[in-house]
Length: 101
Image 1: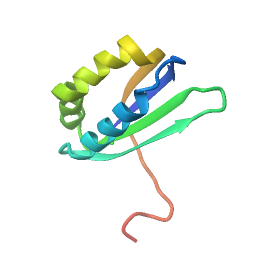
Image 2: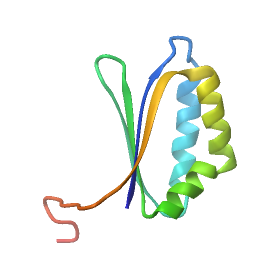
Image 3: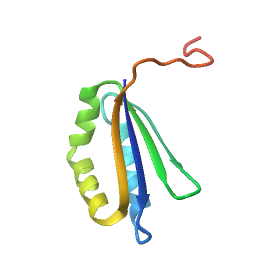
């Protein structure tokens, strides 16, 4: 499993961001190998999105998807005051209650 951690802060004028984010959310769900994603917003305005894909190839296909690539470019130009992106490989996972049981 590959986990993407996307931390960002929006510019105050990023009024159109929710529409673009909703579109990217829907598009991500259609990608082969997509597992899940969720966004959290901290009290200080930092946003954190966690995205899980089944493999590096699936994550790479998402990163390179033409509509997503255009959204990334637009995000840098119009919406983000700052961001940090980390791509991580899950080394171990546990869950309670256990999945499937």
